Image (cartoon, rainbow, N blue to C red; front, top):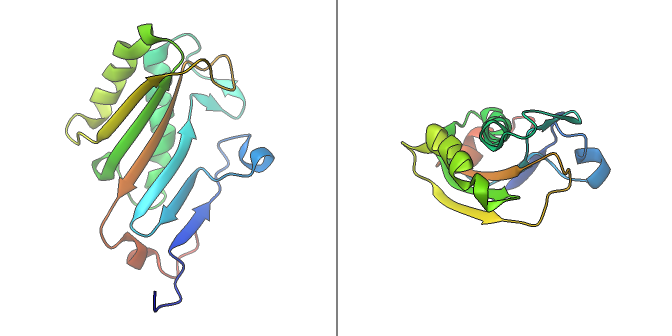
Amino acid sequence: MTDETPTTAARPSDRSPYEDQYGFSRAVVAGDFVLVSGCTALDDSDAAAEGDPYEQALAAFRTALGALDHYGLTAADVVRTRMYLTHVRDRDEVGRAHKELFDEVRPATTMVVVQGLTDSRMMVEVEVEAHRPGLARTLEGTPQ
């Protein structure tokens, strides 16, 4: 690259109690992409909608979309989602939450069943990637 503008910038969030503990950021800008770390229904160590995969998925996606909002992006900018479920029986409820938020967008999507998540109260974790042409240029010189 010829310019001196960084192509990657991270913005820590205050939503996850683990960001400082484990050394990660809720979202990272990489060029015209925003990559959002795994999100659950955990907010400041409190489990939202414990036992309800649909509500947990909605809460997790809202956290991810909130990270995108910091950069002026919305669900319409989402190009990929990933959903990690702790039980296959929850696929329809988590899928329903995904459809509610992304039906018009239709991002590339992966849904997998995992043995467990780091907090046993969580039934679903989601990741989101968004893209907006020219995003890097609009963020130049803006504090992340």
